[in-house]
Amino acid sequence: MTGTGQASPVLEVTELRRRFGGIVAVDGVSFDVARQDVLGIIGPNGSGKSTLFNLLTGALPPHGGRIRHEGRDITGWKAHRVARAGVGRTFQIPALFVNMTVRENLYAAATHGDWKAVPGRADEVLELLTLGHVAGTPAGSLSGGQQRLLEFGRVLMRDPSLVLLDEVTAGVHPNLRAVILDAVQRLREQGTTFLVIEHDMELVRTVCRRVLVMDAGRVVADGTFAEIASDPQVMEAYLGVPAE
Amino acid sequence: MIRSRTFAPHTWRQAVVVLVILVALVSVPVWAGDYWTRLLTGVAMWAGLALSWNVIGGYAGYISFGQVAFFGIGAYTTALLMQPARHWNFLLTLPVGAVIAGLLAVVVGWPALRLRGAYFAIATWALAEAIQQVVAALGFTGGTSGLQLPINASTSFFYYAMLVTAVLAYAVVYLLLERSRFGFRVKAVRDDERAAAAAGINATAVKIQAFTLSAVIPAVFGGINAYWITFINPPSVLAGDITDQMVVMTLIGGLGHAWGPVLGAAVLYLAGRQFLASFGNQTGYIAMVGALVALVVLFLPDGIVGLVPWTRRLRLVRQLLRRKDRDS
Image 1: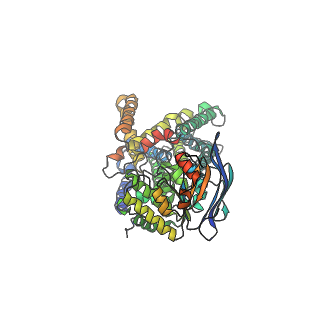
Image 2: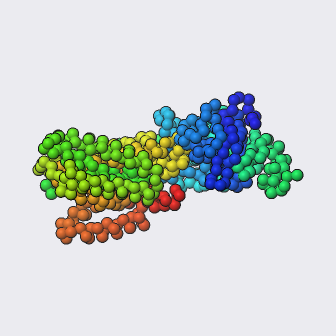
Image 3: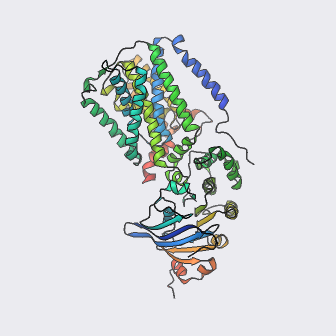
């Protein structure tokens, strides 16, 4: 399975597996993502989407399979090494440094590399995500939508080549949602690749050039939104309708 | 474009205040008598010890009940090296104690910092108890009989030794944890370890570095204290209540705040001495400390520092108390 881009894949996943006791959360998942692609990952709750993200970012070690990022085997790497290699992520429930201000959260996300460039980069991110007016506010005092924006901003501070967004617009005000989607679009044009877990099908339809459908830890469909929308296995996964 | 701001907008004003305080402190032996010089020697020592606990408890978010082990290691290193058979210069013994304490922190911290919440607290408490028992059992440490050190009767010598060490410790901790990228890493790990790792921060390494920093400081104070009190044994430099004092001074001064430990140390040490002078014992002091800790946890989670209107509100007390639930 190959993405829609023409260059070598940014991410190649082969036969990835992860168990929790007797439950197989990710069961032989394989796919790859081309540069500047926006790959949507959908599926019912418990289908293994967030576990897949945890495996790709080193938050969990896989029990089998291979992960290659930019041609380099990163299977089993610790989360901080994966992040330094250029993979950024957000969490399903925003994970912020609540005792730091918004600006300090951005600084904390960029402690490796050119430290002198960090304030300037933080200014750019604050402007891109319209968070400038709350730069000095403790992160714990932000609204839910602003917290998601800040978490996204922290990812951008590292200028990653691959960004994994886990329900980044869930519960977000439409105005802030537009800010996030606009930022995704602009960054994609500049060369960033995205993996997006979403339940909002309208967003998936408009943003994702390709969609992966997961159910019970497996990929049950892979294609454009139009292709997966007419796929009987997808209908079964979502609605429980038996495939004809 | 949003204007870039430095980390603190009032740096110069703070510098002037610090300078005035430093001048006042340096001249203490000139304008204060022996009694007050000795009292302020104690304040300087406890400010440094509370600072060391603030590094691991306030900045890194790990409750340690083992800090006294490092204090005792520093004390015994100085005492052993200054015995007539070795006859080391006092000042040269201090870095040796600091290095031994730092190495022990790395060795212990490597496995212990993988534990969370109460489990880490228990592990560090066990470390302190084990060190106390080992020192009491060994022959070359003097066992339960302890060790005598050479006598230095100069009050101002120990005042300056404690003061210089405390000022240096505060300067190093302030620069590392409030002004450098290392400080951002430590606080990021404290607030959310998963998010810190996702930001490229090696949480294990950062926690060990912070624990080592918090171990080196009490070791130096332990060495100076041993020379000051001229006789040490396990109850005098390895008793668990020394750590307890560090914890309550930090909590009451302001957990996680740069200046919390010095405020807590000054208030509690002077109050303790006052109780002793007035009533001949510290029973009332202990009751007062218990009440103060309860009040701080309930109503003033940022401690005395929190009374200053522009102090940043932290959620550390709540965070530490809920850590087990959050991490499990």
